[in-house]
Image (tube, rainbow, N blue to C red; front, side):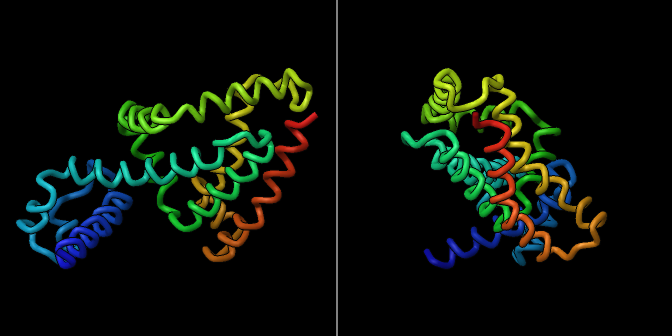
Length: 203
C-alpha cells in the first residue's frame, strides 16, 4: 500500500511539472512517465487518460486556493481583519507553490468554463463568499468602509495579492532579482498590501 501511494505521489509530482511546462495540450503521457521514472503502462494503470490526470492536478490547485479563501473569509471578524488573513494566507500559499498562479491562468485561457465551474463548485459548498460580499455592503452602509462598488472592491483586493506572482518572471528580469530575494519581497509585501487597502477602503 505504501509503495502504491509513493508511486502515485511521484506520478502527480511529475505530471504537475510537465503540465506547468507544457500546458495540457503540449503535455505527453510518455513525458510524464519518464519524469516519474516508470513505464507508460504503469502510468495508465493509475490514470487511464491525460485528461483524468490533468483534472487531478487542477482540482488539487483549485482546492488549495479555495481553501485559503474560505478559511480567511469565514466567521464574524470585520472585513479588514479578514483581508489581512486573506493576504497572509494567499501569499504564504503561493510562496510555497509558486507554479499555481501561472498554471491556473494558462488553463483559464485554455478552458475558462472548466476552471470557473470547479471554483464555483467549491464556493457553493459554503456560503462564505456571498456572506462576505454582503458584509462588505453592510460595513459600507455603516460608514466603516468607503462606498466603492463591491465588485471593484474585490477586484482591487485580489489584483494586489495575485498579480505580482503572475508577473514574477517579468519583474525578476526588470529588477534583476534572484528568486529568493523576490520571495522575500512578497513576504514583506503582506504589510504593504494591507496598508494600501486600509487607506483605499476604510473611511
